[in-house]
Length: 302
Image: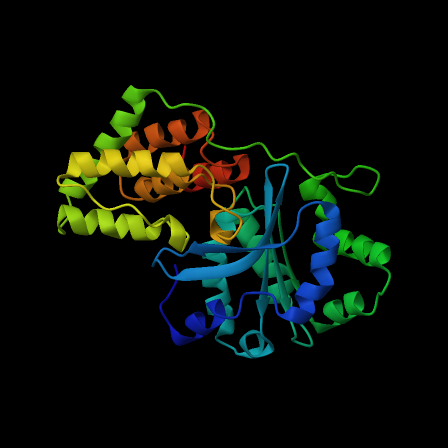
């Protein structure tokens, strides 16, 4: 369980790959057809975690940076364990790069083995030290660097291999299937019921959930209506009308705006409603397959 301690807070602020490592890895992942992109999630304390990830063929890998001081700090491993608990259900592979000179058995064997044993969907965990980064940096030939990265990160196991090159997946537009009126009304009823069963006012609830949707500024045109039912219906209609997020909203990749709203709502409701909302998300293609797999792993326990 994640502890709210200063070292953990320091750790999660450093996870984005530094420019040196990003410049080494990014061209290779671009050529694989699965570019590295900034991602955002939250731990169980709702603390924001930012990192780089890559997706293809329904598989997700996460790549993070941990500084030398955290690795070498005796109590640093506790914070890293807590980070692992926050990320392990969100990916099939976890890879950590550090400038530490050496890695002890905790990072080479114990943590990777323990996390994979605890989370069966997690196929690979690896930590890379300074020498590993330098080995990649010393290879100028992109083709040779790609081959080394494939070996280090077991890329073929996640993304498949086609004559050593990766086909760029065809992107299918999301949210094009019309949701029947009765189902959209039921979703609105769930949303209105949540608004009526919180300690805040209906207006405060809807303004709060609207703020979470991460819209670009020029899309922020919606305002709550009087009453929970009318606000719920208008917010559902508004988010549905927006379709997918624009490329400028990096965190929205793989979501329609309505799909993002429903993922927020899923965190608030009971088990039967979770199942219903997940079915709607999948049936009407409100998120990508990889995002739905994340939702399924996190909320559909059986």
